[in-house]
Amino acid sequence: MNSQTKVAGVILAGGRARRMNNQDKGLVRFKGQAMVSYAIAALAPVVDSVFINANRNLEHYRQLGYPVISDQTDSFDGPLAGILAAMVHSDADILLVLPCDSPLIQTRHVQKLLAAYTANNADAAVAFDGARSHPVFLAIKRSLQDSLQAYLSSGQRKVGTWLAQHNPLQVDFSDEPEILNNVNTLNELSILEDTHYLG
Image (cartoon, rainbow, N blue to C red):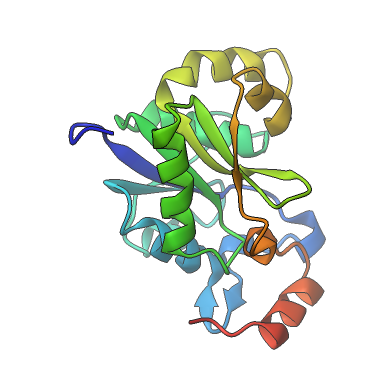
């Protein structure tokens, strides 16, 4: 990666969170901080800019000090809609994408994902836990914007199906797969708080 290559961090906080009583997951607190703060802390040292993709509570997210971008539609079309919004708004060459609800992710994990992506000159690189891919932990070329736009315009939404068109590199995190867990319910949040110590 040359010094002119720009990298933007994108945090996906645009979902409805139905299984969390429709609370805005990025703003739900883990260890006293909004969950989105952990993604910001992981990304900020690695990227040139950070965007938060959100479709609700925009002022709350703006108070964190980073640009907030919403999907181009108001139909909550899933993670790919957030990634497309970031591609449209950013001038970076590479997007590093994280979900807002995986508070165990740290900068070193983001660096590992980006390093693998760069070393292999991939179009996309996704985190792999030893059993399955986690496609919202993603490094991707912004130049895939037209492909993504066409996919969403066709009515499709699945992240993995679209990524498969671009031969994504799998980056192995099987030595600490728990960092890829996302919090879907308040009960899962409580269990995670009881069993993990950050640091």
